[in-house]
Image (cartoon, rainbow, N blue to C red; front, top):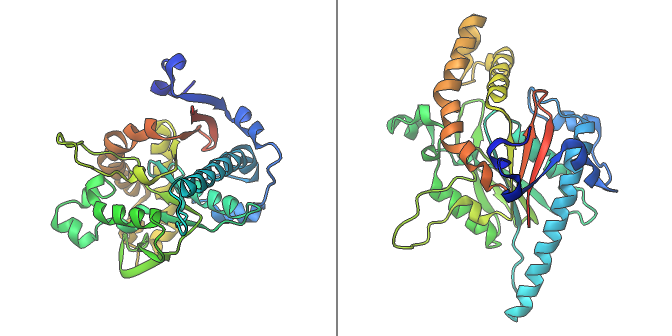
Length: 321
């Protein structure tokens, strides 16, 4: 079945819809530059992506993005001539990736990073997630926002906008804060420097989020204003729910066993109690965020990858030009 409200009026939809098989044919002669061991290293816990899925979905996407990057570089050169600029700094091509927790954003971002970096032109490709721009837990507790972690108000929006603005301006060594999934917190005074990449992949729950517009017409920048291309990873809500619970239960047997883990206390619970905790976290935090903030941004994406029950992409929607 096509993507619900996006395809309700196919005649007027801004998207073209393709089955996974149809989309895979657009790979054409794009070579496979990854091997199975590399794909296994890149995929997240519980994500079954394999070399066949990379060939079926991501090589076609890599080819499409190559065309967009090439067109962007051509437009840059044309503008440079238009302004008669001698020393204009080429700005990075920024790809935003959005979607729910547990839907596979991180895997998609890592696979794309590797594929794009292996183009014949050997571009410099960097990947940054919005996790590092979350407010520290100390602030979230003080503001009573710990149960809103991942919601738009839990991020340093100013920091996010300053980072993307500096990247798009071609500034060197732009710092992005680092986040620890072990301690579930921003790492104090720890940063990664992003130095003028050709392509930046920017991944996070709410990167396509908008805000209310002022009535006086003042400029209100959104993160997506800095994107050249955006991708939304999609699936039925019940499937995402199942993947989230499955991942939580697996982490309980692995990462949560580390005494330094923020979630270490959950590995001491019985299986039924731990599952009840996971259900509570899903319904009280992640489902609310998905319905209130994340899913409503789906129609703003340039490309939507719709996953089926096997966690593999079964349909692709591409915005018409």
